[in-house]
Amino acid sequence: MSRNKIDGGTGLICLLGNPVTKSFSPQIQNIISSVMNVNLIYLNFEIEHNQLSKAIEGLRALKVKGFNVTIPYKEKIIELLDEISPEAKEIGAVNTVKMEDGKLIGYNTDWLGYYEAKLTCTGKGFEGDSVLILGAGGAAKAIAICCLKNNCANIMIYNRTIEKAEELVNNLMKNYSGRVNFCSIDILNHVISHSTLIINTTSAGNYSNVNLMPIGEEVPFKKGQIFSEIIYNPSETKLMKLAQSKGAFCFNGFEMLLQQAIKSWEIWCNKKIELDKIEEIRSLIKETWTF
Image (cartoon, rainbow, N blue to C red; front, side, top):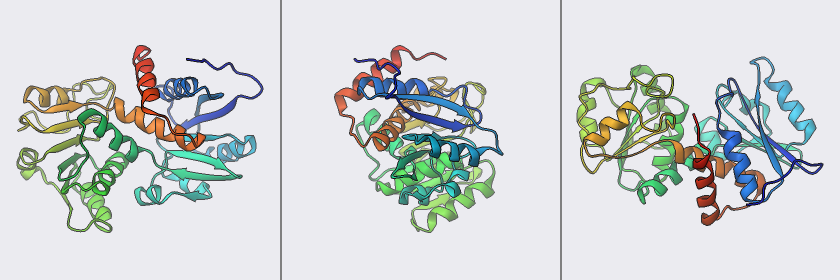
């Protein structure tokens, strides 16, 4: 692997958000550029809430190749861009921006990342899946659209705040009528037992909430089901361990994190990363993976 040195020709890509100190994006993106022998450096920039528009104008002036956007700016960034992709418009959030001919164009690679993650981890797409999504935030919407675009049979949305679940369902029904509904707590166990794919998109169980679960412990997981987290730290959440103990096949959020990063890099560089290179990138990231 050729490790690029910073020189007069080094291009800049970066992450905008608040907070960003715990983000693994620099680790991942700098390994990708190094493996691909492209002279780029990736940095985190923590932007105060009243400084986003100034930051964007600064990046325009610097003619950066592109940047990622994370919480809390994935929605707010849209009004500051020149164009957004159809998928980003449908999801209502942008996590990747490319500078092209002086224009800032927004994309969403979260849904693509989840598609590739499931395909990589299970060898299967979404066709025919009965899906239960835990949570009703931005990640839930991106993943729901991923499942729906790729021919899942149906989706149920569960959230402790029913109004948020209903809001997301109503939003999705505009384009996917008849395939989406919300799941109330009184039918949750029934829905779990009849789902082929269950996805936790909440933060319950992450490094700051390791003992939390988004649902109760009497969960009817079973052999043959797939359970996935978008959490990657810790590598196994409390709910994931429970699902595994009942025989479900489980994968965490690492592969989604990797795949959405790869899709972002491909957008910025207009270059496809081949499977052998992805294997090398994955291996190098895991070698240096620390929490």
